[in-house]
Length: 282
Image 1 (cartoon, rainbow, N blue to C red):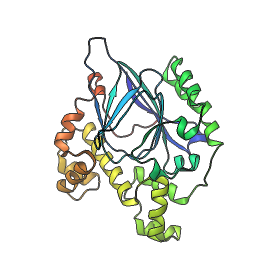
Image 2 (cartoon, rainbow, N blue to C red):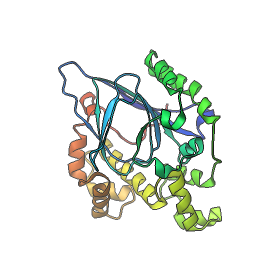
Image 3 (cartoon, rainbow, N blue to C red):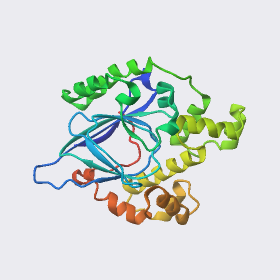
Image 4 (tube, rainbow, N blue to C red):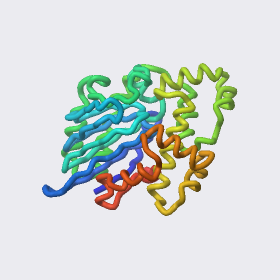
């Protein structure tokens, strides 16, 4: 069983941040828990070569299911992911702005959406999903993606923006540059940057940074459950625990302790796995 990040081919790194493979298999008599899937700074193309998953939204009670290839935009709410006994997802996690460039669809239209990928990219992705099904190992899956995805890149609809590079930098160094500094370097007004951020990520720069810091706190707690919450808050750019708790409640509807009690029951925990900091892609 695995929960691991892999690097895409060099030619794809302008578009693809990383591949993530989650592979979990349960016995016939095993109870498969749901995954409380919090927001993370990601727009993604996901392939399910084995069992698909059922996604339940925390707001409105909407459900999506039986989709073997999915596109989802930037989420700002937690969802419940119910998986099958033979579960493997191959995620293509795009760089900020890349999904907008590839599709021409404003990211606001994809925010909190979990969609049949054929609606966005047209037919053909099932072919890659079928190839993933027949792969003997994870390295072969990465090779399939590296071979298939250039077909999507060739269909680019929109040009790159310098803003994409700054937002990619934020993923790993959220304090590297302020919005005002960014505006000066890009010779743009902050309102223009905000408009372009909505267009390319689905959220404002402020909320994108909030999601990044929330995700870092979530992963740091998973990596170091012994660490106290004040230290986690300070190390991930929050003013104090109350600030961190407010953002947790905004994105999950729960305080940090309560949400991580739920996280400890996630499917991957049965195999000693957890979502930590992004691993060095290998």
